[in-house]
Amino acid sequence: MTVRDNTDQSLNTPEDSTVKNSQADLADQQVAELIKESGQMTAEMTTKLKSVDAIANKTNLLAINASIETIHASMLLGSFEEILAQNMLIQAKLTAKILEFDRSFNNETCIEFAKSTGIEEISITNGDGIVVFSNDINRIDVKLATPAMLELLNKPEQDVVLPSISRGIGGFAFKVIGVTRRDEPGIIQFGSQYVKPEGQMAIDGFGVVAREAKRLADEAKVIAKELASLIFEMKGKTEKLDENAQSIETLSESYRAIKSALSMILNVSKQTNLLGVRAAIEAAHSTNDKMDFDELLNKNMLIQARMMSIILDLEPTIDNDQIVELAEYTGIDEFWISDNQGMVILTNIEGGAGFVYKNEGQTAPYIKLLNNPTLIVTAPPERRALDGNVFKYVAIGRKSTGGFIQVGKASKMYGNSTADGFAVVAKQIKTLAEQSKEITAEMLDMLDLMNQKAAATKEALHVKHSKG
Image (cartoon, rainbow, N blue to C red; front, top):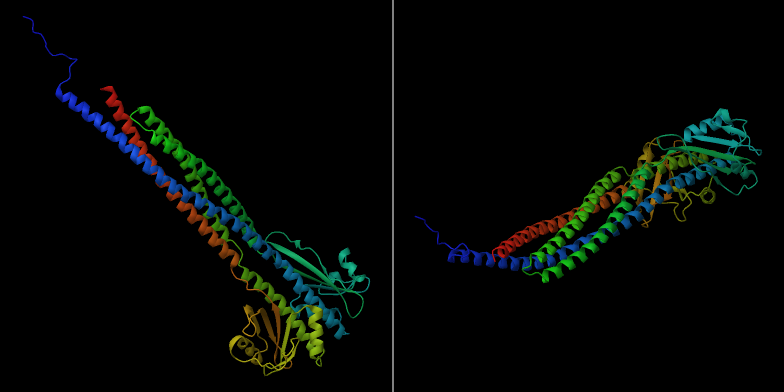
């Protein structure tokens, strides 16, 4: 007996229809949610993109300002050599005055003179440019070889400053200047070795960082502009989204394109972050303006004070008019010479004679010299309480008569400006990069989530249409 299956495979049961309708409703719901959430994401990403663009603008401006700062810092270090030359010229001219006052000056005197004052190299010639006095005996009777220096014999009103000569590793350099003698025809040539501030290497390195930061910021702006166009395009596709799986695939393509652009921005942010770290390292290696310049001024101004002490011993009857003339000739800004009670007896500053130094305020450190003339006093550049002008002072005691000799120079407030300024910029670059990374990462997370939802919606539509 044959048993027949009366079930019609082409017919659906009520349960099948329920499942089918449920799947269709789910697909429709997912499409609606995708449209809504994609629209919301578009608005959020547009806002976040504005932040990324603003960060790129800030980084760009920061990089430009950093480049300007590197130029200023480089100019500051460039002035280091200029300040050295100025002080050496003052010393040479003070020496010219000493030669006027001391007619018995000879080579033995010259050697002791250099030793007691701190002069490194000195050569004094006759009218033919042949060295007659020097603290280096190998130079005696040797004619100066530099044509520019020998020109002083024909142009006594000029000063000569030769370009610095590098002396091997370690940043050592040698500076030579020259002036004419006043007592008779001849040349006074000074030489001094110095160490170029190491900060220039850091400044150069920071300049590279600044240029690279600007390049990355410009790159981020270009990508951000492309990204804005992609987001706008995605917005249009979202508005046209329907139950067609192809339209969802098209939207997914937009997600992927935007993700690719965001990945590029994220990569730029990471590079900028590393750049901030590099900038911090360059800042750490940068110059300490205060230390470099203060040491330079201390050394050279003390030489001038010691020379002035010799002049006072050679010419004990010197008066204020002669001090004024001496200051004008040498280029020294201020002389303050006291008696053993701390009262100013000689100065080139009008109305300064009679001023009494007290053991208080800015004059207090110099009072110590009255009791111990072997001490030296060096003060960093500071704003004077008297008139607000910034001056640098050094002083030595007068061993023969008591009192002190103070030399003053108009200055500027050198600080740790280069290193500190670079450190601030480095921190700002790193902070901006981290902000950009954070925002970009958030946008990537949003895209990943929406891409997953689009894939799920596409699958739901596929199920709906395959059972339809």
